[in-house]
Image (cartoon, rainbow, N blue to C red):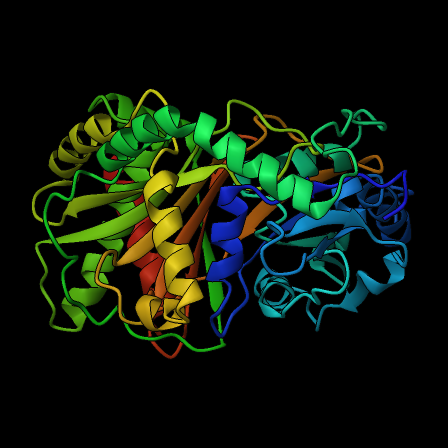
Length: 436
């Protein structure tokens, strides 16, 4: 390392993400932005602006370095061979350039591994879309940023963002790896009382072990390398109003809607569980910037009843989540982090996630920008979040609100859940029942 280099070790949340990346699909996250054709603004202009702003973010010019055994955690280091051309591609969408075809291109970009030898991201510019739209796909390895961090990256890409961005002051000054390791041990000892408190809070966030295993159902089967996605759009104000009537949040409404849709699918398969367990990420961040990315998140498994009207189920769920939410959020990582790292060290993590009976599905919900964004002078008309399922979870959901619309992406392994269109129709009906 040179005197000018700066290093930032992975935090505990980053380590959890890194050791979890053992399945047939990489732990990548992504988003597909639809940019309207607007007068003189063409795809080349949008691509040039998109690329220039991406490369202004320091983390996207850094790669992971792994120290020798016993000398601490992996850390970020500037990539001296960084070449943006290795990260950005242009793809023409097959005619007629519809929404589903653009989604398929985005899913392919998200589900391909990112080389560990260079910065962990890729971008795809999609041309040939209907109505002169351009698609912008951004893919990050989850170790680079969690969902809130990803939104911070998005904020740097649009018009009106600070071109310099916040100072990236999180990196440590250059020191020897052995000194880093010793210092880390002392910091761990000093934080021990705080860690004990976080473990207590984490146990509450995990539901204090109530209810035992998740119900057995055909949604839980070892997944393979293929993924397919569809989206359902609903008005955000309607969902908020539905929640207020029961003292519930938008996330509570989403939990009831997605499990109601899953229940309909299972009934068609002649399966009749009384409840499902959905894992919801809980951010520990108070804010995020593109200079402070990484992962600060816990998990909250929620047992959602499948019996009763939508409003009855929503009232029950809002009561459950209110109890599990802690003043200090994301504390469950203090419990699951060590467990996952032990399983990874024993090479048992893949075996565990392919057979786990803790959750039936995942739901990620991100509050996106309330107003319409613009890039290179052209309006962004829609943003679709894309995550991946892991282990034996055959279907997951990612929701993002943007400019008054809540977009819910349904991500499936089509070999486990081929009925993705039927699932989308069932979810649409659940939202209709909620809003009426």
